[in-house]
Amino acid sequence: MPEIGFVSIFLVGLLGGTHCVGMCGGIVGALSLQAPGGGWGLPRQLAYNLGRIASYGIAGAIAGAAGGSALLLKNLLPVQETLYLLANAMLIALGLYLAGLWQAVVYLERAGGLLWRRLQPLMGRLLPAATVPRSFLLGMVWGWLPCGLVYSALVTALASGAPLHGSLLMLAFGLGTLPNLLAMGLFAERLKAVLQHRYLRRGAGLLVAAFGAWGVLRFALA
Image 1 (cartoon, one colour):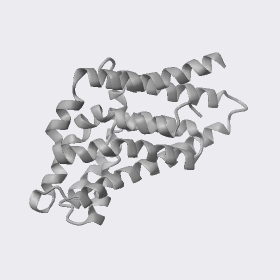
Image 2 (cartoon, rainbow, N blue to C red):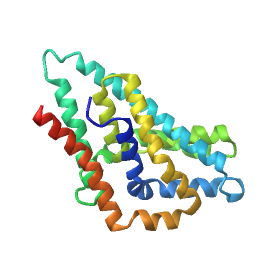
Image 3 (cartoon, one colour):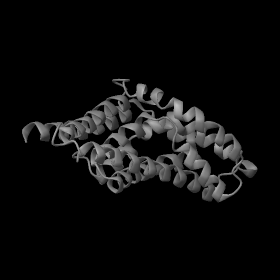
C-alpha cells in the first residue's frame, strides 16, 4: 500500500481544484443552464456530484480488484513494490502537472477517450435533468469523463490490492473534489480566477508531488 492514505488522497482531490476548474467548470455551467429555469438547484447539483463520486467508488473497486489479482504473482515478481512505486510516481507526475511544470498526465486523459466516446451519448439522453434521480444518473455518467487527476488517483486504488480499500480511497478522493465543483456552480468565474492564480496552482501542485516524493523516499530508505 502506498504511503498516501485517506486524508492525503482527500487533499489530492481538494488541491486538484486548479485542474477541476478547467476540466469540469464548463460541464458544471452547462448543467446549471440545462436545469429548469436555469437556476442553481442545490439538490440537483448535489445529485450530480454524488453520482460522479459513486462512479469513482465503482472504478476504485475495479482497480483494487485488479491490483489484488496482480498481487497473487508476488512470489514470482516484485508486484507489490512495483505498484507502490508506480502509485507514488503518478502522484509526482500529477503534482508537476497541476503546478504547470510537466504535461505527461494529459496522455492518460487521451487514453480514456475511447470509453468516454461510448458513454457521452448517454449524457444527451439524460438532459435536461429535471429530477434529483435523473441528475444522479447524469452524474454517474459524468464520473467516467477522461481526467488525468482521476486516473492518477486510480493508480493508488490499484496499489491498494483490495476492492473495498480501492473503492474507499476513490470515495475519499471524490469527496475532496466536491467543495470546488459545488462552489463552481455558485460563483464559477470568481472561483476560476482564484484557482487559476499562478502561485496557488504551483503551490498546490508541488504539495501533491511532495506526497509522492515522500513515499518514494520511504521506500528507498526501507
